[in-house]
Length: 208
Picture (cartoon, helix red, strand yellow):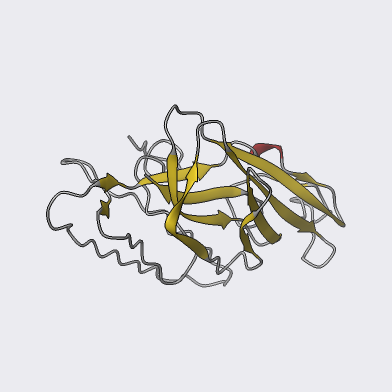
């Protein structure tokens, strides 16, 4: 359950049953093939982290709409969420350098995962997000942090137990992007954080 004051939405609102894919895209459709649907249990809700940042010196108004369409009948498969953020807390990019932040998502279960889509989440100093399947084949790549794409897979890609998805973010702290500065205006190391002035590297997606 989400806790009041949790600005990062890490206490439950985002990671229980997310509308995954491209969270920063101005429009996004979480659409599945026939026989696949999301499950929203009675008494629960959809938590939204709209990810707005106000770069102006006057207030702005946020408007977000979510349209939910019921599934007719009983689906064969229930879509679930991939949200791998376990590796981003070690982000550390010194001033005027670029650095790759690696991550790995592994199917730790005993049954196959049928991957329906993949996407990547970075902040404003992210230059590239790339992911690879266990065999080294490229699974996903995006170069636009502010308008990330989501890659669907039809048919789904099978991630067997023990198989993994390697991913990485290329972050830029002052080479081609503005350098991160501390409260006194001095160039400082870029690290993980919740605002767009900090950084993240999150693999997102859907599967059943």
